[in-house]
Length: 200
Length: 341
View (cartoon, rainbow over the protein chains, first blue to last red):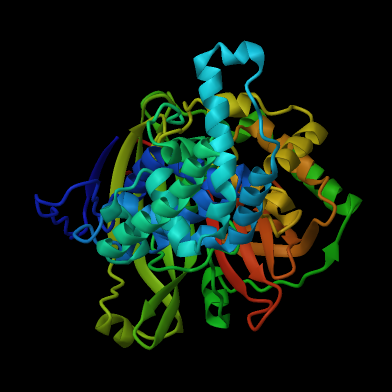
């Protein structure tokens, strides 16, 4: 589609050293821009949220995230953060309302019966790998449930949403050094579980 | 895909944890359509307001009532059940194939939507609230698969609820008239559109319209199925069905036959009321069919003589603004000789 504008809007370009998707959200084609953002980010965001709070809640949260983003668009500064970090920050904040559901889900995962590859599957490396990974997941689920909300956000935004530490810092509004130290601490803590499993 | 082959057991565990979730593309498309439908209804919303409903946030004042409803206060005699269904059936009877004007080649069907919308903007020390007017004009070619033209105008007309022009000016808020124009093939201004693969109540497509049930009871069931239920976050109950029906009607692309079936389908709503009296929107009189969610009444307004959809209106039914009109949109269809005319 094409678009022309008869108002005196300003569309300043972000400085060239800034990386990532940093659109102007105060321009004349704001609805079209949000349509693009939805097309680009909604599906992976749904998956991230669904892994945290379940598929149904995730649909509502995606909807609420984009509506909230649209209504807060004047607060988005492309010079300060990539739009992906901004959107995931909103989504993560909204998802906190469902933290109890998330924790219950992780605890339920931990209680699931441990599977062992059957004889046939044991000959198929892929199936054996999957079963092994699922058992490891059950191993760490209760520990993730026990993490503070802030630590869990840092871990899962990195691991499940694929954000860099800089993007996580922008999303959560905390210094990048804090993100790195939290991530290091949490991963070290969880690794003792997976390594313990191997040596058991 | 989970990274099950990572050399790091922790990464493998994290990849496998809850990795069996599925994203339903149809649901996501519906969410997209609803989102785009919502934001195009609130083109000037300037700051965060918690969306406690799917609908845009609206405000009312007595002054706004006179302004938006053309001063047409009406007495409300509420009826229900078969009286409402009979009235809707009567309106449906007036909708015939002749109700949809045939667009001569080279000419355009012009939809004009006028809306008064509540706006809230946070400023230091509080917030400003006002209502403002916007007009959306769409020119649809005789061959709908051709290029559509759209002009959205903020007219600058506004009505203060909390605040004044001076405070607004100091905070960089102005009310000058401005327009945005855009064009898109087959109405795909935001993707989707009339030729879209999916479509829905908020963004009807030709295929979606063709697939709707021809029987009014079946169409009601379809509406009930498509509108979100309580478990999907709908706190408005049956009112949400009227909102969904209105979303489709407001698009201006629902063919006469489907419109008539939809009117009859709405007669199945258990708590639908009829406003006995002429409601005046933009100088056109109609009957308002309404559903109240306990805090706000949604109304679909139909001309009983022609069966034309005139528009919709919201009225507060609880709280300090009880009884006040909180906003409306009207829809007018004409034939235009050319785009932008």
